[in-house]
Amino acid sequence: PQPPIAHVWPSRPGVGAPRSVRSACGAATRPRRCCRHRLWPATSKAMDDARKLLDSLMGPSRDKHLEEQKKADGWKERNVCKRFLVGFCPNDAQDNWFKNTRRDTGICNKIHSVHLRELFEKHPDRSKYEPEYEREFLQYLEGLVSEADAWIAREKRNCRPPEKQAKVPQHVKESMTLMQQQSENLLKQAEELAEAGNLTASKELCENASKIKEDINDMKEKYMTCTSVEEVCEVCGVRCEPDEPGAAIPGAEHNGHYMAHLGGKLHLSYMQIRDKVKELREKVKNAPPKEERETSRERRRSRSRGGGRRRDRSKS
Image (tube, rainbow, N blue to C red; front, side):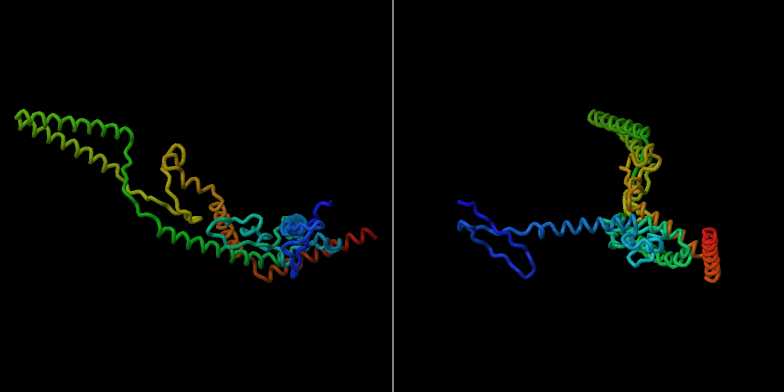
């Protein structure tokens, strides 16, 4: 007898496969889904990732005609991230700075190509488009900084209040331990004298023991300081425990919470954002008037056209 043959039913929209079908020998078998349909989502994602990688390396015009590729203005396309051209993009889908944090504002699915940025920096129309791109980039970064400042203010209100702690040096702690033992011995002697009926000597020893305890309390009060239990970073707004100042290894006595966060991705990201905001504000402040920019751009264009004519003459 022939082995049972199971039918393969392709999964198409609107067409459903029967729950069970009969094989050639009459046995009921359950239809299998088409392998192509099962693997299609994973294949589509891999192709999309490969396309994004090629766009970032070669630009979106890599499949166009050679003459169009030589124009070197693929950075003008609408699907190219203009923030990346003049700086960086914190929300790049391939490198999202705020991924898995409560500051995540979404991802940017546009093209982030180093090749296009190099073409933009060498293009004669750079001075025409760059001020506009930088103004938009500055507005975006100022929004991130404003949100970070609001976060910092909120975290400061949520910090635990300062507490009093006695930070006594080691040699002072040893002296206090000896004084405590001396006080306990005096009290024990005072009890023995009281039982023996020598109340005057017993009273004198009790007064000496009380004097030693007062000295211990004065020493503790001398080294009592009011310390903050939590501290908020003024750059990124992370709330953490402050480190022990003056330690040989930063944070060795306080787990290094504050020092550890300084090397975190969130802190480094906000440092770069704040530095870029300062740079762009200074650049906008010292930017020449629009008429001067247009005049200098026309000069560059005329020089480039003149250079092309000279090359044509030399060829002829």
